[in-house]
Amino acid sequence: MFANMLPNLGKVLSRYYGLFAQGLMYTLLLSAITVLGGVVLGSLLALMRRSKYKPVSVFAVAYVEVVRGTPLLLQLYFFYFLLPELVTFVVLSKFVSICIALVFNSAAYVCEIVRAGIEAVDPGQTEAARSLGLSSRQTMRRIVLPQAVRNILPALCNEFVAVIKETSLASTFFVGDLMTQYRTISGNMFLVIEPLLVVGVIYFILTFSLSKAIAKLERHLKAAD
Amino acid sequence: MGTTVEGGHMIEVVNLRKNFGSLEVLRGINEHVARGEVISIVGPSGSGKSTFLRCLNLLEQPTEGQVIFEGYDLTSHGTDLDRHRQKMGMVFQHFNIFPHLTVLENVTLAPTLTGKRTKAAATDYAEELLARVGLSDKRDEHPRRLSGGQKQRLAIVRALAMDPEVMLFDEPTSALDPEMVGEVLQVIKKLVENGMTSIIVTHEMGFAREVSTRVLFMDEGLIAEQGTPQDIFDHPRNPRTVEFLSKVLR
Ligand SMILES: Nc1ncnc2c1ncn2[C@@H]1O[C@H](COP(=O)(O)OP(=O)(O)OP(=O)(O)O)[C@@H](O)[C@H]1O
Ligand SMILES: [Mg+2]
Image (cartoon, rainbow over the protein chains, first blue to last red):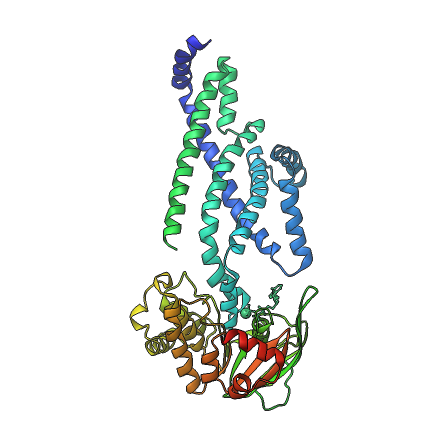
């Protein structure tokens, strides 16, 4: 088996490089949509969590706990089967359903990232701003958030890395990501290991280079302090 | 709008109580501050000095009692707190300078955001104030490059930019290296000499004696004794005051 590995790898690559490229594209697309949607929804949740209206904050807390307390794969199934039932006025492609599921999942994590980022800002900053007569809104927008972004940004990038790996679960539903391509290719060629190696290397290069870039960004933000 | 209450004092404190959970930090304080007064608050650590000061501009929500500022009951529901806070400058022990803004922006932010001054007017005034405390050449710097003393002078100027009626200082020199204490005290001294009503929580007894018109000695959540600096420092009557002074004046 191992004797054939190199030639097999060559065959896999030369025959299916297009599919790998396509898978890479879908994985990146899924991850980008997930994180962008997650940031919007997650920030909203973080604000809701800080709301002085109890039902609003309780909802946000419950949301985060439920999402973090159940497996992502289960959530994907849930949305995959449920959404088409709920949304009847348009035909949802499975790609859209999966995207929505991933966004809902990521939002819970982003919510915690944003909340932690805001809470890490010295409360003295808020006190100083309020003592000058700024409203709580002005204080949040002009004093707290600009400082929180420094804590939030690196953590969000880490979330992006995590999401890249998590999107592989979406291959359960054949949405075209890297792992989907792996399943297609291994099925076609009756090879299990070789295409897996290729996909693994692609994942690794992606996450490794991103992590390096994040570390650099973090150093940069620290230096600016 | 808050309830208007008649009375000649700038600040009136009526039966002020503050609990943190089961801990009674302020236990019913009645006090008033007239325009032009310079009040020092001294007392042992944990006696509630900071809490009292922070209740005056409602950074701390009193558990019970009233704080009446220029006739408005700040503790009553529906009072436009932001509007009144604009007239009560506060200086903190740890400066709380806005690190993401330049020195100038630290000073101009509040006047422009609250609509008190146009950007241009706020900038002019900020430059004048910065010059007064010797920070003109720092105007475009980022605060992280300032020394502690410079940061605290900036914090004072930031508060002054709102033209406050009263200044609240919470141990403004306690976090400073000894060689920088003087420059900050000098700025505060100049301010009170020009008639700024001030309330100063401090451990600098010499300074309190020098600048205050009145000294409050706080102990266990109450004002245990008060009087002129001579009364308090030379002829204290309350045994707790005597004990405290004997410790700090050694
Ligand atoms: N946010 C808070 N939550 C709980 N307890 C608090 C809080 N703020 C102050 N306290 C407690 O209230 C008491 C009085 O605190 P305060 O800061 O007013 O004292 P202080 O006289 O200013 O002391 P110091 O001279 O050390 O600054 C202390 O026992 C303190 O631990
Ligand atoms: Mg204190």
